[in-house]
Each structure stands twice: as structure tokens, then as C-alpha cells.
Image (cartoon, rainbow, N blue to C red):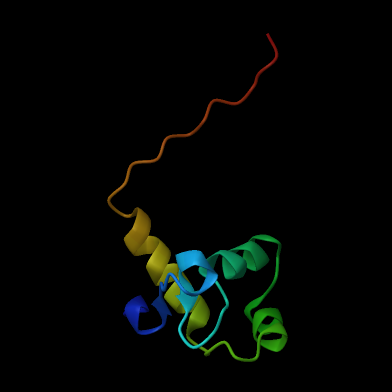
Amino acid sequence: MNWKDYIHSDPAILQGKPVIKGTRISVELILGRLADGWTDVMLFESYPTLPPEATQAVYAFLLDTIKDDVFYSLPTNQAA
């Protein structure tokens, strides 16, 4: 999937946050809902303007965003 067919950034829309084309629905909002336990069905029922490929495009966008970066785990606080 080419996420660029579905996601873009425009300084005039949500201060340039990546959004689903043709909407003001941000990648951040979609990820937040999914992180809160929403299903795709819940997303599409609540945001009927989302194209069916929206969640797959968000995942592809994230993969391209992080695949060349290195992430480190933060140490957890452990009782001494």
C-alpha cells in the first residue's frame, strides 16, 4: 500500500498534522482511538468519511516513519 495516496499534510489543515486526504481526521486521532481499544468497525461508524483503507494507510505511514530509526526502551523504576 502506498500511504501517500491516503495521507497528506497541509499547513492550513490542523496545523500541518498528517491527515486522511479529504478529511480533517488526523493520523494521531486514529492512533489514539485504536490505542484506546477501538476497532476498525467503531472507527468507520464514528467517522463515516474515512475511506476503507484508512487504517491500513496509517499503519503503512507509521512503518515508513519508524523503520530506519532506532528506539530504546526506557528503564523501569524498580524498588531497591
